Image 1 (cartoon, helix red, strand yellow):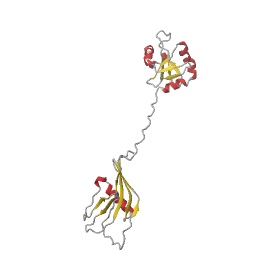
Image 2: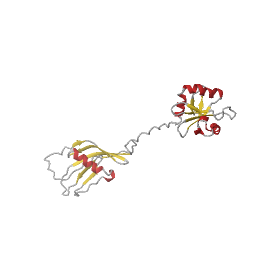
Image 3: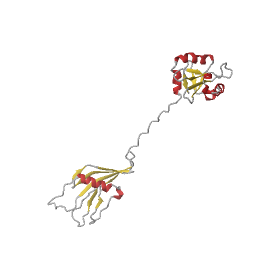
Image 4: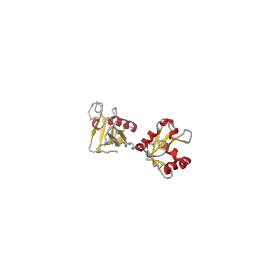
Amino acid sequence: MRMGTALVAGIATLALGGVVTPVASGRVRLRPCADVQMQRKHSTLLATRIRTDYECSYARTKLRGLLHNGVDRIPRRRAHSGRWGCTLGAAAWTCRRYARGGGQTRRIRFVLTVQVGDSTPPPPTPLPTPTANPLQRCVDLWNGDPVNRGLVGYHFYYHHSIRRFWVYNLPSGRCAFIGVVPTSDPEYGNDGEVSVPGGGWAFLTDVPELGDTKVLQGQAPANANATLSADESVKLD
């Protein structure tokens, strides 16, 4: 919580109006009550050391009303007004209802502390949600097929010296692996594979969805985004 200057205002005495039976001798003993906390937009008001000759439930409710608008708006003493008012002593506030006839009234006393700043801790910063690469599905499909890797992957790596692939998703959702090879390659336009729905792989020239495979093969160097390793596995950049 960002804390500001704590203002300590004294014990307040709140007095409700009404007729009070005179006390034969001595002062009325004030009962202690639980603290009252008021949360405002930019500050927190805390009334402590509450003492009163009212019932605590009433006194605490009255305190909330008097503190509702902040320290600057606590009603001040107005004798014979029939209204509540408060005075600040050396270390405490005293609030009471000032009877129109000027008779003795009961009171509530409290120490007021003001904490400047928002007392609510800020919510924790959420961890960034990792963004999954949609092409990882294609790579997992390739790496999870040891037969294709051992045959076609081996052929690509050792017979065609393919080290880089352009991996992307076709509109149909099939995975395309287009090898990076020179135009002098004897199988230029067919150096790559496309996944087959339901399992398996097809060479480029067997997939009409690709269009002109030689043009596609020529675009692979500029779009390469994965590496073919000696163990025939593929890893995205």
